[in-house]
Figure 1 (cartoon, rainbow, N blue to C red):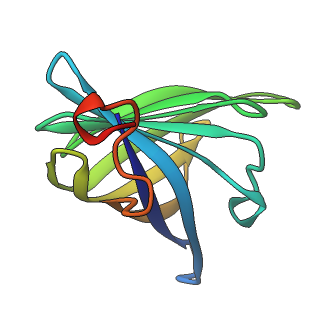
Figure 2 (spheres, rainbow, N blue to C red):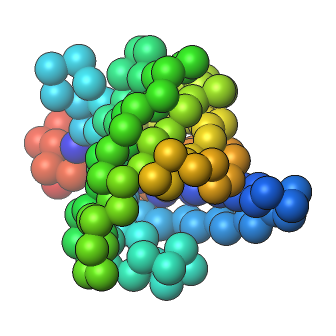
Length: 152
């Protein structure tokens, strides 16, 4: 397991072409299990999801974004495909779908970049287009956790 810094930039474009940009830098962890890379970090009040934990599962051809806490969701992003999901909030469930138009993954051994571009619809009605750029780099100050080779 490595300690990492996760930088997330989200650009949300609404029906009128207005962009809302949200950026977050958060400490997190990276690990690999059965050939899948995992990045975990906590959201903050900047994203409006204070106390929510986000896990990104990185595959060669897709990304799965999981959120748990005040909201619960699981979105899978596969280039050219639409995937339905349910967004669970304290106020009830919201049926959603994401259609992925852009997906690039350049991620190796706990560091790298993921780019997503996708439409989001709620109750089969288009809401907005979102671009998500996620950069992960090793946190130099702490590095590996629990690795006896480096004395932790």
